Length: 442
Image (cartoon, helix red, strand yellow):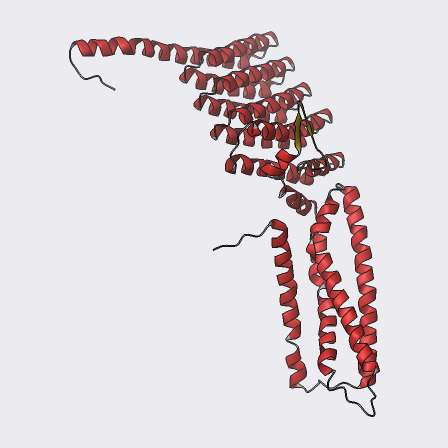
């Protein structure tokens, strides 16, 4: 039977095991003392050694605690105040304080016992074990600074903080942060996504794109995990989807207002990937909300003439629309076709030739998919906007695009008409075969 620990208990177990192994290695040094017969200690030497050891341990632990608090303060001001909770949950500082506390007070106890020893009358033989143990504890306390410093430096990396915060993004915690009292609002204090969003926003202001990417991808990965592994009931899918995409949309709109194309591309990519996954999982509401988020961000991107971001939005909208058609989500395909048409129309007006071409191709992709599935409403919507793009492209003398969209319209119409003709002819053909008492071919 496999025993599963909670995440916090697992971290404590791993760190305690590390420090325990380190102490076992140090305790093994008693073999050295046994080999060279170094067990016996003079009373004055033992007293002096323990006094020095205790003093140095007290000074070190005071310095470590002070510097740790300064590091926490700097991290909180640089990223988010929520990172304080991460440092509080990290076991290394508490283990180190415990180790130094045990070493100091145990050493004081042994030192008190030595005070009662008369070097001319008494022997230290009955205290040698305690003195040696104090010495081992001192060595262990100094050696434990190594793992602690490495872990502290690792915690100061934004990626580590983000990964630890992302572990708290679960279905249960996300739902608990959504308060639905007629007007849905969010309990920001308990929202597991908000700390990462704060960190991403601060990083955007400093043009720290690596942290922006890590933060957005961490949220995206956790969202994918929730949609793929959880089951939803009683409107839970809508609540979680709306909450996740709302955060992405706000970051995307902020990036758009700053004309920060790198950040807006990262937002679009994460929304697009999640939308594709929810479409394949047949999560209708989540897919529609992904399209709506791409709509808001894509329109901002094309309005600010951010060509790469607009093309990325069109690319994912085309893929989501095609996937939605495969699962008979006609309303999503219709919405996707309409949105791609609007983006292509604006791009053509701004004379963004290559962008208009890419968006038109995505619109053609959705139109062809809807035509093959005989989703006439969505197919006609694609044709309608392709005609508008053709007209605008002709007006602004974008000849190649006008020719491309005209060909796309012709292909979509031919595909739809051909399928409808086959659908009409098939019953008549079957009836003819029946009258001749022949088997109907497939």
